[in-house]
Length: 177
Image: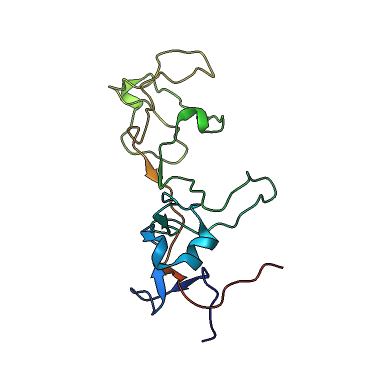
C-alpha cells in the first residue's frame, strides 16, 4: 500500500486500526503528540484547540460530502445531522382518504356470517364502530379507525454494513494547490 496522506480517512472491514492509523470514534487527541494532523483538522470536530483536538466520529453515522447538492441544504465539514429514530406525526402525512362502501342488511334473518357470492359487506349485529345512518357518503365515526404506533419513534437508519472508518496519523503531508 502506498503512503497515505496525513488525515486521509479510509474504510476497513476489520475491528482495529492499522499501524499509524486511528479509529474515527471522536476521541480526543493531545496536540503535542500529533501536531501535523492538528494543523489539518484544527477543532472542526471538537476539542479545545490549546491542548487537544478531536478526531471525526463515524460511530453510528454515515459519511456525507461537504457542500450543497441539488435540492439539499448545505453541509459543512464536521457537521452532524439527522436522527436514528423519528416519530411520524399526522401533520407530516400527505392528505388522503380511504373510501369504502358498506351496506347494512336490515333483516336479521338474511345476515350471514360467511359471505356468499354476490354478497356485500354486512353490518354485524353488535357493530358499534359503524354509524347508524341512511345518508350515503357519511364519514366513519372516530372510533372506526384509530391511531397506530402509539407515538413511538420508528427506525430511520438506512441499510448498513458494519465497517470502520480510520484516519491516517502519519504519512505524506498534503500540499495545497
